[in-house]
Image 1: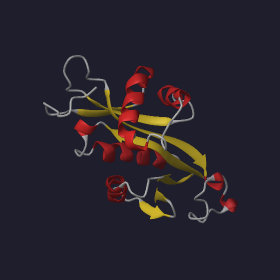
Image 2: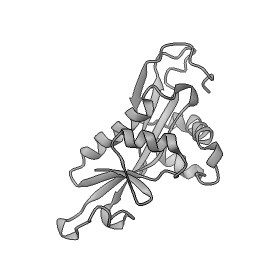
Image 3: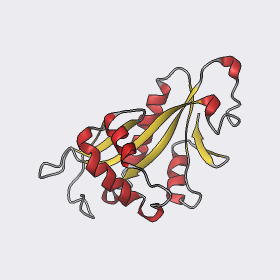
Image 4: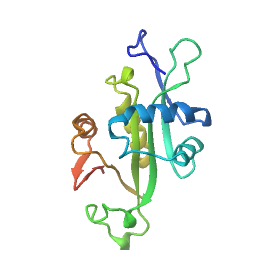
Length: 173
């Protein structure tokens, strides 16, 4: 795991998740969501699906300048899933029109960055990876997520990246 303080200037790169990320992904996820562990408890199948790209798209942040062979070890992640607009809980907010054919949304499931690497823009870059991905899908109407109402740092982050609060969730159109 990462030390509490970074002792070097990081070189952050973004890549897809690998099966070898499984253990560290589970550990970081547990660390990031520790205070809300009962709300964000994911089964091992979820993590297996993430690292193997089954029904979940994901991006990993790694610090290529880390010493001791850890240069490809995860320091942040984002996971997302494509959902149909008509089946989502935000269809009404989007003014979903079934006459326009098949439309999708990208739903951000989880986002986390190791404590020692917070605030230099890694989470923002991971969100931009999701937005770029969603933009490449012609029938995608929006990117959305849920955030707990008392998680002010996360709400600030999402608003900074142009998400808007919309009835219990946040969306980017």
